[in-house]
Each structure stands twice: as structure tokens, then as C-alpha cells.
Image (tube, rainbow, N blue to C red):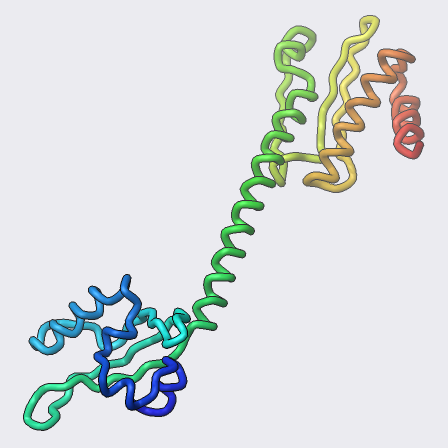
Length: 212
């Protein structure tokens, strides 16, 4: 037993002389380490390095890395071991692991929220049954880049006129989707309230409303 081991455990060299190694090993780890020791003495397979907890004289729990080697000592087998305190490293790893899990949970929550927003956005587009009713030969392609889209289409039949709007809003993802929802809302408003059908007037009205 060297000075560093005494510093780590809190026990003096004299106290160690009246102890066995298992006295400082954490109770939950003792059985596993005893099995390693028995296998090593019996020349069976056992790891040369492993991690375990120890309990110091002050009842503090420290995480240590053990490196052990079977040697001959006074015509018998003995185990030579080195112990390194890795408590701070393991605590840092656990902190990073928890932060990683938190990021994954937040990412999943955001993804679920955006996926729900996609359902809302798709519901705001002109429905296929309505399109089938007023158009005889058509197709639609709606493939958002980031789940939700800044692009949208809007189709209405008003007073015998078929008005078809295919729009590309500024931005993509969430900002673009907000703009597309705004565009659909404003189109519904102006056709319902003003019955505008001229393309230039439609665009000018949309621009003014967005600026307002």
C-alpha cells in the first residue's frame, strides 16, 4: 500500500495491514470482484483491468479503475494491483449522457410537434375531393423539404371561374410554413369578402395584407 492509496481511501498503512481488500470494496461490487480474484488465483480467465466502487473511511463512494496482475511472491501466488480514481471522469461522462438523453427527448418532442403541424398544414390545402369535383385532368405534387413547407396550392371555383394558386413562400421549414398558412388564410379572406379574381389584384392584395 502506497501513500496515494492511503490518500484515496482515508486509511493509514497501519490500518490497511489489519484489513483485506474487500473491506473497502463497495458491497454491491464485492461479489463480482471476489469472483475475478478466485478465477485469477485458479489461473482461469479474469479481466486484468476493471472498474469498481470503493467506500472510503469517511463513507464516501469513489469510482476506481483497477489494474491487476498475478505474480509469484515468497513461493506463492499473489496479486499486484494499481488503483486509479476516475470518479470525476465518470461523473462527467454521466452528466454528458444525461444531457445527450435530454437533447434526444427534446428533439423527439420537436419532431412530434412539427409532424402534427404538418397534418394541420395539409388540412389547409385544397382537398382532393374538391379538386376532383372541379377539375377533370390534374395532378398535385407536395413534397416538403423539412416535414412542413413554405409552398402551398389553393384552388377555388367562384362564379364559374376556376382560380388556381401555386405559391412559394419566402423561407422553408417552420417560417415558410407560417407564411404558407398566412397565405391560405388571406386568400380565403379576400375571395370570401371581396370576390377578387384578377391575378394582379390578388397578388397586390396579398402583399398589402402581409405588410400590414
